[in-house]
Structure formats: C-alpha cells, structure tokens
Image (cartoon, rainbow, N blue to C red; front, side, top):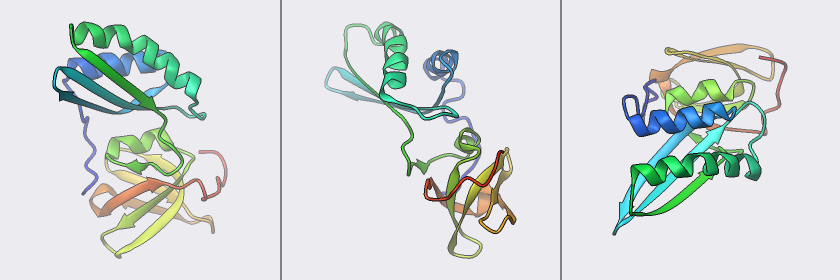
Amino acid sequence: MRYTPRQAAAGDPLYETLEGVARSLGMALVELTLSRHKGSVQVRGVVCRKAAVGVNDCSRVHHAMLPLLEQAFPGQDLYVELSSPGIDRVIKDGREFVHYLGRGVRCYRTDISDWTGGVLRSADENGIVLKGKDGSMTALTYECIAKAKLDDTIENMGEV
C-alpha cells in the first residue's frame, strides 16, 4: 500500500460534519468507518490530538457526534465506537502523519526494503521528515513508504 496524501472522505458531508465536531473539541478525526449490518449501522472512528487521548475524551466526542449520527441514520440501530490511535497505530493514509508530529514513527521503505524510524519532524503533501537517534534527518516521499506505524519506543528528541 502506497501512502498517497488524500482526503479519505473529502466531499462526504457526514465525514466533514463529524470531523468538524471533533475539531471543535480540540481533536482530529483521522479515521471513520461505516458499515451496515441487517438494519444497524456500525460507526468506528479514531480521534487524536497533540496530547494523549483518554476515555473521557472519546466519550465527549461520542456524545457530541451521536445526535448527528442518529439524524443521518434515522430509525436504525447505531453502534458507535471511538478510540485513540494507540501507541502502535498503523498509519493508513499519508494525511495522518501531520497529526503525529513529535512522535516516534517507523516506516518500511520500498527503496531499501528495510525499516527507518525516528521522531516525526514534518509532514506535507509530498512526504515526511524523521529525526534519527543520531540527530540526522531523513526525508521520505510517500511513494517510498510501503507501511508505517507509530512507535512510542522511539524517544522524543526535542520539540518539533
């Protein structure tokens, strides 16, 4: 899977509305999955912010989103689950990187067929920059990243 920066749900009014709700509470909605099962709708989301996201944070976002989801899916049973990215989240899309600045990230690179890790220093529409343990900076384009995940074993080496 290549990391192409894209808005996974750009143009989807429900996603944009729910992302706005999360943003109003100081968080970002980085993943939203909707699935239908025999008259019910399952909604799973991942929210993040610079500081750690706890159960109370997820609960606040859940309660703010629920009336909008009930309006979007009237008369259907709703199952809504919100979570934090976790300490070893698999980063599923290039647009997510910007939310993890200052955190440890490991990327499997197609150009060298190996992992490169470091603290995420920057992310834009072209790629990312990681700061290694030795202080060196490694720029990676999304085209050379086959997979990536958060890695909290990588120590933060200074402010972003």
